[in-house]
Length: 266
Image (tube, rainbow, N blue to C red; front, top):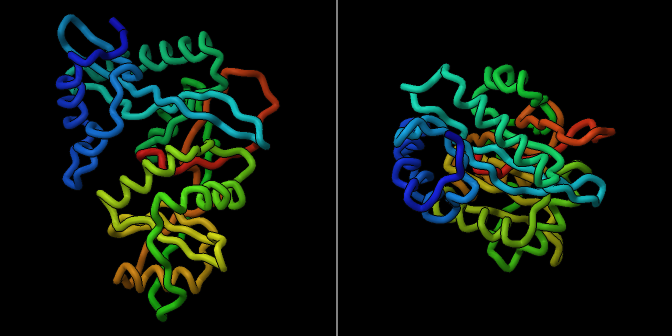
């Protein structure tokens, strides 16, 4: 049986989540306290047993200023006792039918492991969202940043539009406030560099990485290392070197050749 979760399913969903996504850094507690929504959690059940589930998170894909509703498949997992029985395939196909019924343009996801790109390919997913990665190495003090707050959200929105691909996941003010809160609670926070009153670069940081850095110069990278007290730091930014996420289109093309997504609980 496939159905959406209700409040009564939260405990079972959390148990399966912990089996499939064990966590020691506090993310699971934070996600369930601030972001979990049973109404977008699609379950595959046998009797009272929860066999598999996916989150159908609503997002918008912006292409040259035009926005389309899409589904972001997140937290896809199957109980080890029920694997290789078709539960995930049925959940995905059901989610596609719901997407088409609602007029959504596409389904997107971020494979947790490289081999999962091939797992999702038969369902129609193709690599589409790309990033670049590099490592910063401490060489000097550089240009110091300051911590970003919710007062900087309008500047973050403008920087994101200026720095990312013309096809990208749309981010509104509520999205940015949520990211700032999460990185403050669980990570090292978000940092920004300004020219006058204008935000020219930012970095959202965990203990050992900048998950997203936009507009970062070499001097600003050195300043970030100094602010974090690190000798090296892995940084993810815009680019086309590495596939991060996949898309399955529900609508006929033409489509953009590539897009950008990140900071999606990944």
